[in-house]
Length: 497
Image 1: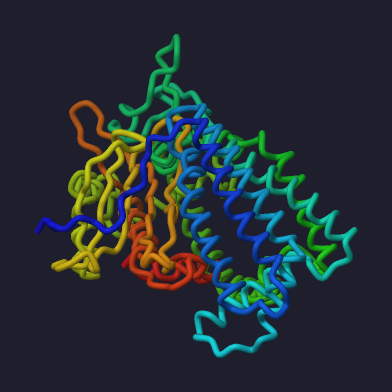
Image 2: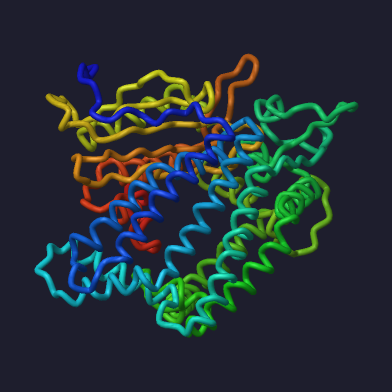
């Protein structure tokens, strides 16, 4: 049933130009910096929760709500200039984040407010604890020369990480095969490949709908090997960036007094230390290795049988590019289950609305599609409400679905929490989330179909969307998926089933 109520918050406007992406980012940063200056100028007597922690938390939330959509364009826009501006905007925000985290004057105001020992709610106390911990982790207790060195390292690390992500999104590589080399790959997949210029060969991109069926179905092990090696080397340009990032992280951890970067990262997670991670993984490996060895032996026998049948040389080894192919064969033989036939039951134009219906029934919500001028014609925009909405108080937020591959788009599946939900002096600020995926597109004479894995992934990612939409916190920094990183996948993993 259509909701005949005007949402209390308008959706994001997606009409930005490269120039105003940067100008709006700079304006938002300037507003946040002015607020920090005001807090830093408070006398010790004037520092309390309401004058220090609260305005800083709201400023942080409003900065995120403004700048996250502007930084998002780099992952989805077809306009190269807009993507570049978006990347530069993210660099500006990252640099400002480093600058903000290193402000001793603001940290002193936080400490002065904390000393007041005010009676706080649980969420307010958590805000205080987290902001104080942020200062410690930023190195604000260090001597000035060490803080200066740390800021320099962090700013370089920020640029390296942003460039790494841009290269990931801009990757446009292909690997070329003849039809004979693609023997075994389903015809509908081959029909989706583009012809290599000036030949009768096929150019296979590294997008999921193109490359993964090749790993699973190509009979020729040389084809799988060449595809795997090309896929794993598609971002060779990032090797020096990764090497530099590792070194910068090592230096930052050493200055902050951590044994290694892993200890620094795990401190904010549920597991707390890198030793606990290693102990957990060692215990897991000990328990799973016998199972893995048995499975490998089973698949190796399948490989020997397949090579004999096809007249191929067999060397007794099981390579990484063998796994998806023989895992598929094992499922087909042991369960009589053919993934290529199963996906006939999952046409995209049926599955997507059906999953939305399932979530609507399960969680008591309603999706209402709202047409608009979005970043791409294929994107869908939804206002999300409680089921049987009676008033504007039943509004939950905005959601976007960007489901199909295109050049220079983020190449996997993920959800961006574009705007957090939080309360400010004007009332409720509602969340916005965007799901980005790369489902197969229809080909001539055949509808777009989803592998079972794709359906599971869709349920998973929609779990992140609802984690954001149904979360209700006062402060934006605790909203939705802004939880410990070793917990954030748990709700979505449960909702896969």
